Structures are given as structure tokens and as C-alpha cells.
Length: 300
Image 1: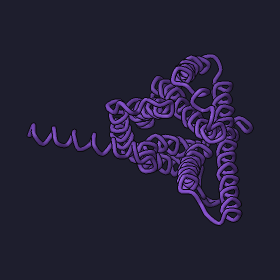
Image 2: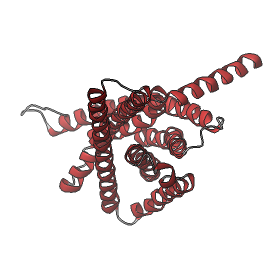
Image 3: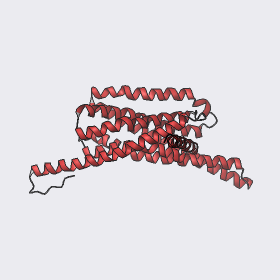
Image 4: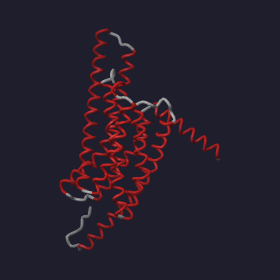
């Protein structure tokens, strides 16, 4: 932000603003170049690990696989368009970036939200979960998410304000749904802990089965809480700026660019976050990486 003195001319002020803006653009582009590498490599590794592991055919893994595809496309397509647009200020690239960013990042956000709902249902309806959340239903919902995101991008060409307002509304809904899902997960784990504690006091003993079930629920709650914190950190600034832009019609260029980069950061963090917190996926990813490394070593 420019803090020019009262005796400085408007030309000096404009020149300083342009120089500051140029520095911010370079810094932002450099950050995105780094994020592109992690988004492509990380999500490609997760995607390969899921597709080459026959046991990963559960509804949650199908959602995770589509999340990896969306995040991979963010790094492969959306971010390069964004960097070139920032450096060239080309109007056509600006349109392509805006529509592609919503399509791929929108899919990523909706799938992350669906994963939070899925984890809540797995705990709340643990006896009926397998009949409620089936592979066919998950595939239908995922296909619907992809179609709606790409078709809704056409709104951009008719009305920019409605387009960005719709993005703000959808982002807000996703954050609210995720918040309630994680609050529900926390309450379920807390209630289960109290039940086990009461039973232990009454019987003066504990069963290994109850302890194991509680440990798994506690781990699931911790995982989902970490996913939620990362989600809020990456998407909340963009939601706030979209809301402020809709109310005041101010451009907020610098804030907007860094909020956009923060959204892109989520696509780079997701594969490493899921591999860190999900032991089975981490093991499959490590095996896949070793196979790729061995193949490359033999070819050399």
C-alpha cells in the first residue's frame, strides 16, 4: 500500500504504485511456480497409488481419487494460465484462468466438503453407513459435482457479478457444511469417550475392543480437524474478499492475488496432508514412489 507524503505529485504516486504492484506480481508468480511443482508431483503420486492399489475401492477413496485429479489439474492447467495472465495481462488468458480456476478449485472444495460429510456419516450412522454411502451413489455425486462446476462457468460470460457472487455463496456453504460436520464428529467422539469412561467405572475394567474403537474414532476426529483447519485457512480469505467485493465493488488487486495463491496452496497441501494422516495411503504412496525410483534407476 502506498503511503505518499502530502507534497509528492500524483505522477510520483502512480509510479510508486506501479512499481509496488510489479514487485507483488513477481513474488506471487514465484510462489505459484513452487506450488505448481508440488501440486503436480504430489497429486500424481497419490493418484497413481490409489489406482494401482486394488484394495482402495471404497467410497472415501473414490472421493480422494477425484480430489487428487482436481488438484492435479489445478497445478497443471489453472496455475500456469494464472502466472502467464499476471505477467502479460492478456484479456483472453484472464477469462480462461477465471473460468478454469472456479471449475477445478470448485471441484476440489466440494469434494473436500463431501469428505467431511462422509466422515461424519461414517461415525453417526456407523451401522448403516455401508448401505447409505455406496460406490454407485458416490460416483453419481462426484460426476454431478464435475458437471455442475463446468456448466456454471458459462455464467461468467453473461454476468461477472453474478458469477463471483455465486462463487462466494458456494464457498460459504461449503465452509459452513464442513464446520457443522466437524462439530458433529467432535461431539460423537466426546460422547463415545464419556460412555467408555462410565462403563469402565461401573465394571472396573475395559475391553480391548472398546479401547481400539475409541482410538480409531479419536484418530479420525484428529485427522478431520486438521483437514478442516487447512481448508479454512486456504479458502476463508478468498470468501471474505469475494463478499467485500460484492458489497463495495472495490478491486482489492494485491489482496485478491494472494488470496488466490492461498486457494492454490490447498491443492499442493492436500496430497501430503492425506498421506501424512492416512496410514494406508501413505504406505501405498511410498511403495509407488519406490517403484518409480527403481524403474528410473534401472533405465539409467
